Amino acid sequence: TAPTPKPPPGATPAPPPDSDKTNTFTAGLGYERNWDIGVGVSYASTAAENLTTLGGTLYAGYIFEFGASKKEDQQSDEDQDAEDEPFIPSFEVKGTVGTNNYNQKYIANAPGRNGSKKTKKITADNTIAQKQFELELDGKPWEWFEAKLQYTKYNYDKNVAAFQSALDEPRALKSGAASFGSTLSGLSSNEAELDLNFFLPLDFEVDTALTSTTAAATNLKETGAKVEVYKTWAERWKTGLGFERSKTDTDAQSLWIADLSYEF
Image 1 (cartoon, rainbow, N blue to C red):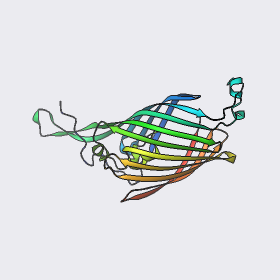
Image 2: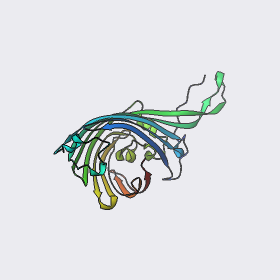
Image 3: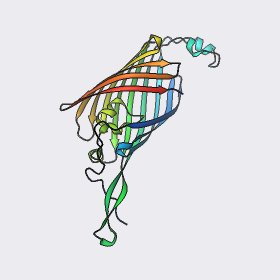
Image 4: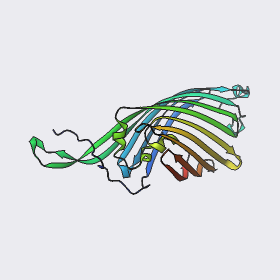
């Protein structure tokens, strides 16, 4: 049986710039009181790169509340209207572990059998597994403001540069579980991110993010900034517009964002 060939440079035809579109699906199950624990799964597909991503996460954290009202202890969840619950300032420490498995299909030449000089076209897989270890600090001092600070470390089972060499755009590696830093440089070795979220009247929300990322393939440092404005309609529909900017020592790029989502 002929060995599975490695993807040669340029094995995947490069699409036109910025043509990649990634479709994602995420789901999760969790419990939150003082303890915050849960699991999540995500799937993403980038057709232009013949790339799919399947991942899962497991997280656990503890929420410290300040000035908690005894009213919560006197009423059951069924009798208490969520809109009537008083705001309680809080601070959370959370740890997350997870994995993402990237699989890219490509067409390559396989050697013929029994020493034949003829080759044949076959479909093969280029894969890499990513492990994630994350620490998050989350503070909610006021009802209209929330701040999150995250540090994430990634490990890989294969050479990252070799895997990414067949991709036209590192952003194709993003998945439903990917952070802002992950979408900038592709596969990272570590990331630090600060999120500042503002909850305004009339169901408006402003989310900002600052990130510093080290690319696993090149050790190149990249910084990014993002701002998005969301509006919630009829409690479940959400529309948003945003802008992000990323920069390295040698390059810079900007991206406009449009978002439409429905919360089940």
